[in-house]
Image (tube, rainbow, N blue to C red; front, side):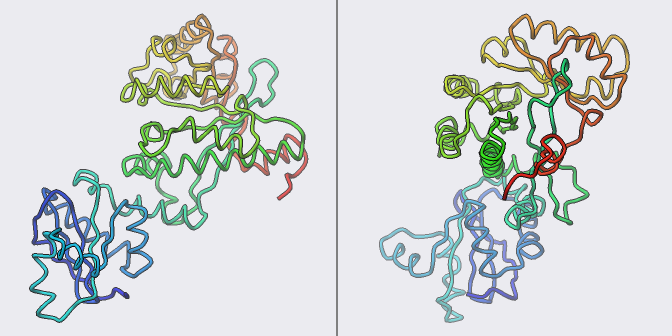
Length: 376
């Protein structure tokens, strides 16, 4: 079915699902309950401006936006069995008058709250990902004593022209809201494991990798994250001790029991656990004891924004307390020699920052530190 010439009819309010009805080349009807005119208008703009309605884009909406699609034959069958779609009752007169039988209904499974965030930025990120424009860069983390890189943190870069001016943190926040972060996190983890396997085969060494993961990955009802990760580690023959997962305190606050259960499984597997951005919210040393983290990462804001001696002493205090609890400490955001000199006084374990080295493609890291390219 080719969709052209689309007009929006948002005059129907039914049930607790939002539905879009695609009818031949005639019209698209948006229906919903407590959707609100503003949300409908936004969705209307998305359909017109972003999806450029045609079969492939409709399929993308169905697959990636968690929709259910019913062809006209299925609707007829459900109607015959007494399962009447409110949508069907409303558009039936229009279809009858125009002798239309080629249509289908798409139902959203999201609430109207989520529909606000459906649009352009989220769609463009997904499109960039499908097109291969999302790359993983790796920033080294250095041993404070030896000055040698001991771990690589995987960081996302979006090379899509339409999103170059959008901060990557903003992009990540947006796909966290939509839920696509789960897809991205799993993709990143698998790409990192592939790289780890290749390096081990080529150089006969194990490289440690640090991966940021979202709380959404833990609360996905469709999978057990620890189980899935175990399967991936086996598939790519990667030692769990070479993988470090960075989680933020948001996960600990909103999903405490589940986090504790999953962390226990991950720890038993041998995976390293690190709490990221410590000191930026409700972080507490109680978390560190309760969840048995291996490492603590002090947020770069302490070096970035605060210049006073008092604030640097906060970093010193965090380092001492973490060491007392048996954790290793990483201080990120080291951008100049004076900062490096200062954190050395704090006896932290690891440092990271542009002054030491920037994030780079894995091939560039290998050229610089291994002086040999990885085989394709």
